[in-house]
Amino acid sequence: MSITFSAGRNTPETLEVNVSNRNGFVILSELLDMGPSPEPWGDLDPTSMLAKLATAECRVFGIVRPTTDNNGERVELTTEGVSVVKTCRVIDFGITAEQVERYITRLRALAGWALENGEEVSYD
Image 1 (tube, helix red, strand yellow):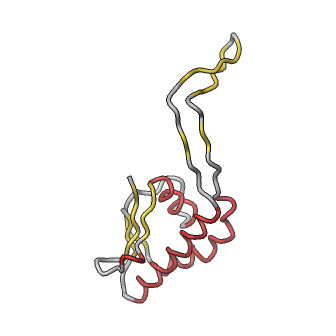
Image 2 (cartoon, helix red, strand yellow; image 1 turned 180 degrees about the horizontal axis):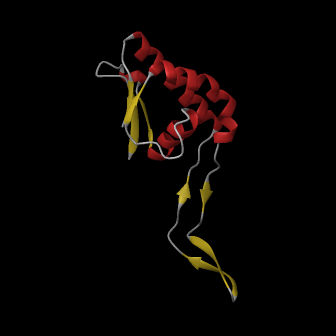
Image 3 (cartoon, one colour; image 1 turned 120 degrees about the vertical axis):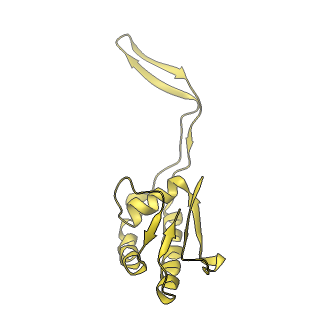
């Protein structure tokens, strides 16, 4: 699953931003300050988007998440003590500062194009 940011049918392919659902929600909720549970589709005003992205660089390191891997185990705490239980393996690849900065740069270019061409930025 992924989220694509574009600005109308005539958006140059090089300006579209396609990211995983998880990183899309990071962009929406943290870079664009849309709250903890933004809708997974919608339209954004490019002027407002550019304003939010202008302050996003100050928050890059607060958005960075490390890669985590549970190695197919989880810790279970009971009244008898602590034990390790086998479970499905979950790897969360996190998000790096470089990725966040790249998203800011690419979204600025997209919003700038949308503003110049009278389009809103849509995502779905």
